[in-house]
Image (cartoon, rainbow, N blue to C red; front, side):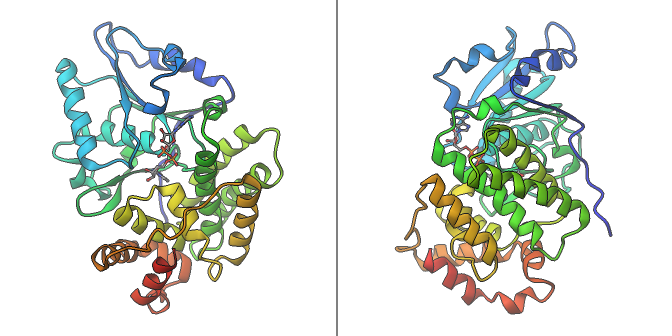
Length: 355
Ligand code: NAD
Ligand code: ZN
């Protein structure tokens, strides 16, 4: 069976394109009484960014807490707050931030029209009703969340996305200016998420010409940014992120992402940094990719945390291994159909204990 996947229908790209948001939204505002909900990363709370956001009097502004990765209970709480705000559903949800805020916006737009808790929908194609119109505006480049059909959430049982065609944004605004103020380390971690998406897609068994086309271009753009000090770095990394997302949409990620999901579930390590921690120990799987990653790290002068599993207890370690092993498509993509023989529990444990 071939995957028949939905893509974002409307994209605007370029430095300053954020200024067109007002026009884009005005087409969606039904009447004078209706409202939009802006979910904006709390990093912008004490800046003058708010003045550039086309907020109308009745609109709701929520600063998203991204100090940890999005949890299902946080989504459920936001949905309750929005429902109470005017006793009516909004005309749109606009998520402005990194991958976490974009995922929050996707999940909230879905949960406003689907009953129950967001944890009931972690999985594939469990969503029944279309979402509220939703817009994604990245302020960090790398995750590909702007392009993907998933909203990744951590629930009581698992870290797993709400994957559905309804999850895909209706509109994205790719304005590289919005990424300019990001801290250097964060820019690197999130950028490496994109680089690793490309390495894992391009070396995987699920690769096809579609995924290869996007993946090779995204990889080249990452190399321009992190090895060659490109003058167009912000533009290039933003497009690399989108292309990387498109590449994995028709293939899959691999060993590094499986291990990173475990690190995040067990130890609360954030996605980009967890990828960097894990990737450094995967030269057996990705020799060229890991060598190049180390060069990029050296140039960027960014430290990768070490010794994070030093004091880990067996219970947490077991949970991490279970989460990682549960991601079967990732292992199959990386190691082929007989991946279970190649990756016994013990081998994962060994890798985790090195980190
Ligand atoms: P993030 O959204 O977690 O943000 C990281 C930090 O950077 C936060 O502290 C935030 O406040 C800050 N920040 C964001 N933009 C900033 C800016 N312009 N200036 C200053 N500070 C800024 O980071 P991320 O790496 O973009 O996203 C990681 C999240 O994305 C994880 O939750 C992960 O699960 C998710 N993800 C989703 C997908 C998907 O397809 N849906 C893919 C990969 C990762
Ligand atoms: Zn990733």
